[in-house]
Figure 1 (tube, rainbow, N blue to C red):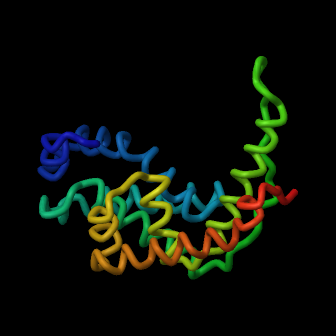
Figure 2 (figure 1 turned 180 degrees about the horizontal axis):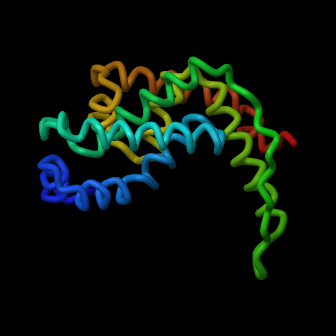
Length: 182
């Protein structure tokens, strides 16, 4: 993700290195915030807060953990705090569906409904289950990286993922039967 030499330079006070470092991680930070919060404005706010925290706390980063898990812990904690402060709201923004030539329009529509329903199901998960699902399946973190990021024991991460998969299976029951909610 980020070169260790860039991290060390930023820690030693090299302002250009710090700016470069923040630019390299900003997309990752925003994406994680968006996956957890499912709201563009909240994700932008959380990402900005996380980048500021990374900026101010870069000196406290120790190479005991991977840099990406350290960043992930920061952004996830900010999102969880934001989620606790604000009751979840339903976004009324609809994304435009753009159809490309030579693609089956029916498949595109079904895929859009599936993504919407999966996102809605993830949003219904308890916050700790949602966080591990986002990190595992949307950010492709290993179990150990998730444990480091969320400061949880490895077995707790496994348990949360198991329970989250069960909950998602229940919530997405219509898809198992071949149906679509619309």
